Length: 446
Image 1 (tube, rainbow, N blue to C red):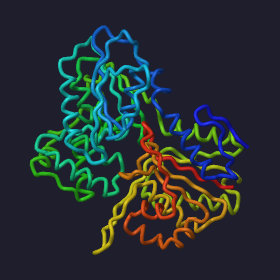
Image 2 (tube, helix red, strand yellow; image 1 turned 45 degrees about the vertical axis):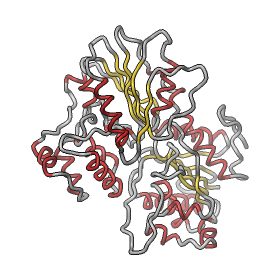
Image 3 (cartoon, rainbow, N blue to C red; image 1 turned 90 degrees about the horizontal axis):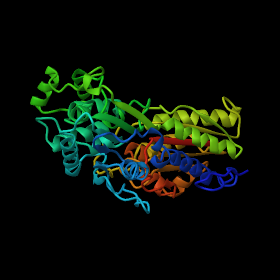
Image 4 (cartoon, one colour; image 1 turned 60 degrees about the horizontal axis):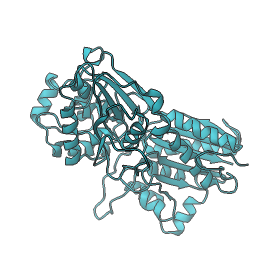
């Protein structure tokens, strides 16, 4: 049973090569989110005045190149977009560069991101009502577009960002704090562009596809408040300098809200979403003769615990044919989190991201369940800060790891998914994919 895909050829037979089949579904999902195939339908007409392109995100390079290919050759186009290091794809032949691309650090911001953000804010000055600003926004923009509020240093932002990442806070919580400690996020970039028209083209990497959460919403209204940000900082025990805390308490760092006149006439278009990618993968599975079921594109929670829930569902299907009949593929997306465990004295530091952590929870709960294979990976190709996108889980994962001297509980204790799966050759490595619609999970039950 094979199916054809215009980008990848026939799908591997899931019964003969289940891992290759799962990788095929991932590739189909990523392909659905590439900007060149989605951006054109959302482009406005060139304006009477200038067209300025600003933006940030891990998909920034591919979004810029798609725009340069699709924008009328005789219409002026200029601007600046920042993306993650090593995330600028090779330039397509025959597409001239019209927009400057720079690189910066993710997930912890650096000086290059701060310089890029300052330049982007400066470019937004002096625009007129005849001008158009195209904002290209994708996941990762929160770290790449860093411009600390008055009273904060870059070092403060780096510390706060890392503490949020390690705390297990959800993406909405992290971005609420980021917006209120920034001079460019939470609608402030849009305010700087006034009176120009702003059209935001965004790739969603967040549960619920809320543009105010994607990259901390630099061009859209922010419904969260300074009080919300303070509550989150207190909940996770994260300190900010006393003058900045006072500004949060007084509301001095409040962001532009829904209904503010600065957003009048602005447009936001979601050009790619997690659900669309999951639907593309489901279609590919069905074409290969395997029924597919999408749980949700909004699953959040502690990664290892989400892995256990997925395992329970897969075991129910394998044992009882409920709630789905075998053979089938179960798909899900969203953004899980990892709470970093304290290290014991002398204990080696763990490596890995949320996809690998989920796979450890999944493997442990599956307990070697026959006929169940899984792949969990981030659609940007980077799991946390490592060089893998995620990992595979197979019926003999635990047995092979044990033979390699790897004890699952030890790796869970120090959040070391990378070391666990690397030892058995089950890391899934893709390199940067040039898009980002967040977590992709596929469980194949035969």
